[in-house]
Image 1: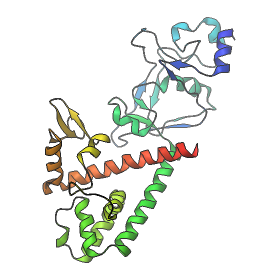
Image 2 (image 1 turned 180 degrees about the vertical axis):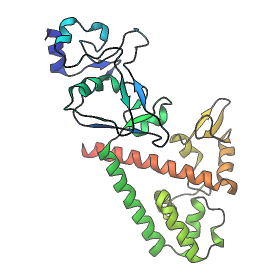
Image 3 (image 1 turned 120 degrees about the vertical axis):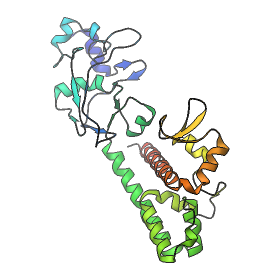
Image 4 (image 1 turned 90 degrees about the horizontal axis):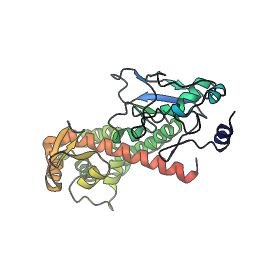
Length: 288
């Protein structure tokens, strides 16, 4: 092994444009964002736009062009520019597989792959993400606790009048027309998808400035709606639903009873994004 390669192995800090390339130390599972319709993709090492070189993750700087014949003798598998890896939903890379270990260094940089599920929302190219089983488990536990709390509030603590206020806050246009049993059934159903919103609406300390728990600032901050060409705000991407061209118009859209289902979908996405961040912060605090 050359001195340069030996040093690189010891330091274990291969970099690409300021980003440290991680080694495959545990099993990686790929998941499709749209697992019902997403077809398999075949990916190869990418060309660096600035240098024109192919990054394969091997050699002194990770570029195929820098890999000497002697270097090739000391790697278990030489990644070529023509190397192809097929990614499907459930595809697994294992640290015990030497080919997987070598391929992982360039796969993690491919635009079709997001290293975190939530990162895919900021990348229009990503169609697969790396499943974080521990984070997903923690997220499910947190979600389950919120659902349990919301159900308890609905069944044992909230009066009918308070239940009406909560239902209005999460987007129902006329909850007062429900019978007590119908209203409770409605809220229990909603608790499956917007438990945190129900808990917030039940808290008397929470402000409801817009008459709904979902606000323009929440939507923009969490990228549930985004500003597109022409200065318009849309829900669901550039080809999604137009919701207004300024804060006032978006707020009017949210209050309009014709948009109850869309607002409910926004609430669900907003809650999922907030829950994901909560799990991430909790993981950082515990050092896990």
